[in-house]
Image 1 (tube, rainbow, N blue to C red):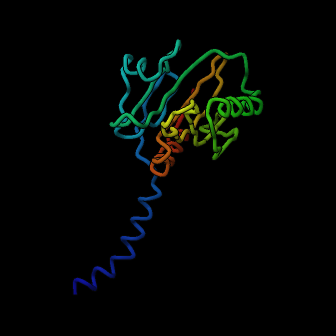
Image 2: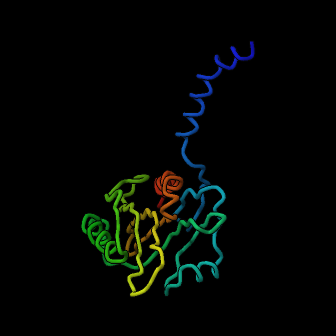
Image 3: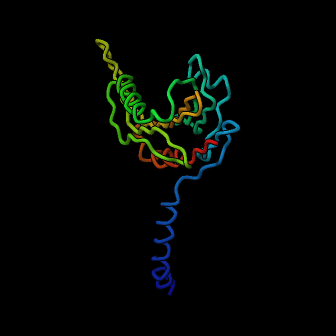
Length: 187
């Protein structure tokens, strides 16, 4: 009798499982600045200033960096001055794509577009990058990363939203990255 009840409930359990699978990642709405909010994946924690300085050594530190518990996956938001305007997005798409190709040994683009998120246009690039140590006698394995980057211009400022994870974890993190990027809200 219990076996029969199980088989009656099985289709319902399959439908419920499928719905949960497409529900998307769990994101927590987080204010980055007074005008920018984003859904940050559950379990990600903001890096303190000294952690940001150690992980992202640059003259201009990101506005915020959120990392997963093991520190292998990051979402960052950076801001810098620009002379471009949002009318330049098609040109910026080409410039940023070329810049990314020059930064890495190999790049496989998964998506390159100007897209609208929450009534605002962004330049969006999604790719897997590889850095190979080509020095003579080097036997270091290439470093591969899955990355999704979105750029937006507000006034004279460029905002850069970056999600990166190890390439071997792309399958796990790609839907999360896409969810995070789709949650960006700029006022």
